[in-house]
Image (cartoon, rainbow over all chains, first blue to last red):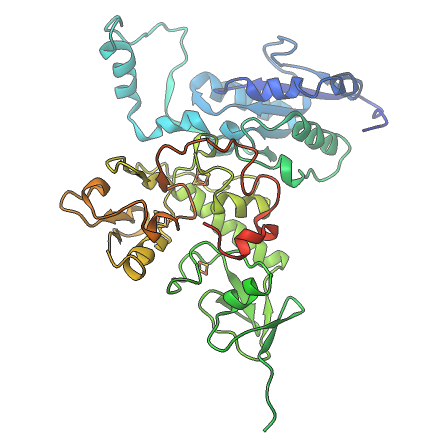
Length: 183
Length: 239
Ligand code: SF4
Ligand code: SF4
Ligand code: FES
């Protein structure tokens, strides 16, 4: 796709909350179009830049569900700083596979993993550095306002490219049928 | 007396029907898709999912229960009705526990296929994450209530075709769930068999054959390349 670079580069932040970084891999999967993308946007906070906290941005792309207190903190920071917040992938959109733990009590899960399994230390880790797990795993829109959603596990590179270029050029983002998937 | 032709109008197209047919049956036979989940022309209409919502002579109704009559003006594929259908789908998604990326039915699932076709980008409502029981006691089939939409197709197939009455729905609202007619309540102790008609009708991944899994890979499945509204097998009631 040939796009005229906008007057000023848009700032994009990306983050992976409780996800597998698969959506970020998909972003890398746009291959040589990455070169075109960096002509249009500048990356702020992102695993790609390794910047840890974000300044004012135009677009936030967030993968992963909200599982712990650190996820909430990062998500709120991105919401405060970004004009458009995009939930990317099944976990961010619906809670995804991490939300499969929601049928169990979080205390019981921790006991089971750290105390009852063979070879464990009989102690749930309680280092103050560790973020506390939330009672349940939440999709982004149950914690903050979300402007756009890209379903898929992960959405393909093509789907991300189409969605992003639509957003950047101010069109209502759409996905063609084959890019619109929940799996 | 002049003969009145057995036709009605659906979104401006003339549809022929046989007396006694429902609007949905006549439309599907004529190759016009109306979204539906709990309907299968083989069984008594149930009218519960409301996906087949249409406007007939300016009144709303369910195409799977309303009989076709000469001269009806039926609207189905309108932005307003599709918006309402999307909302119904979102409610179905948050009511159950649908983890499509890990579901063996993904790509062959009608609930998902309708969500694709109607561009349901998110679930919108707050998820209930209601725990539901999985029954893996049967040698050939799983019953995963997390994905059940209470359409009662298995109930009707077992009762009307198999003559077995294996399934029923118990409980109300969020507690509504499929129960199995057996001394233990387990599918493995019921008379259910993989050759039953009930084994083929589930529109979602709730009543699911074992040992099939991902034999057909994700991406090569029924609704992966074309929308359900344009999939000819969907029009003929695929299973
Ligand atoms: S039954 Fe359908 S909608 Fe539910 S998880 Fe499986 S594929 Fe997704
Ligand atoms: S198990 Fe399947 S066919 Fe039976 S009620 Fe649930 S969704 Fe419908
Ligand atoms: S298909 Fe008509 S109400 Fe379900």
